[in-house]
Image (cartoon, rainbow over the protein chains, first blue to last red):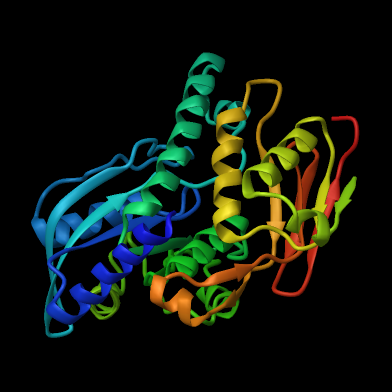
Length: 212
Length: 115
């Protein structure tokens, strides 16, 4: 990114902080199957009453195109925050079509899905340049110290943009959100179950605090 | 396996580093970078990897690194960007390099040959 573009963007951030930001564009990121779309659907339902913006599936890379929902107003923590949320495809460093065949897909279907999944990862990366902040969703039953998580966090830190880690799936028996807190102590972590709707008030308060 | 020194990496542009890594990894080599990549370079490497995935030829990379060290300067703060110094990074073909365990202090990987 050029120096002048970077300077102009940063000036914009300062001015919006001083005079009040109109609307923040927040990306929902994370590895495949972390629960990004489940969370996006939950936020949209809670604050607009609209239906799901994406399909949820146990098969990885179900979301292969970024979906933006504009104009959400979240009232939390004594404030109103206007948001656009962007549900992004799962980030990955490898995509093997055989992984999809294990879910019962034909070889042809699996190859098509793999191709679309690679395009989805590129789209998710491109969106990083157009965001004001990120909700990084992690599966609390999995090891948090993955390269996808490290890379997304590193990029947000380099851009000096706010990041909120969402430790999802705390309803599952082997969930250990404390591992996520221990792995990334420099960032706020909110523990939720997007599927069951647990602890969402705390998430909305944190969104208002960090992105407002 | 190729261990690439910090001196060599410092003389290369981001694109040259990414091209070097992908060319080596696609021929089955494991690459260890002494000083790693910046977060921006890492994300560009993932992006380039996605464009080069081919069915039955190349399914992507396994990459593991420690979080980059942040270095904040006055100019960086003015521009809203922190400079980052990459740390040791291991990269290999996804079908040959597998991460066994990783934490803040240690990366354990398993390398399979002839897959």
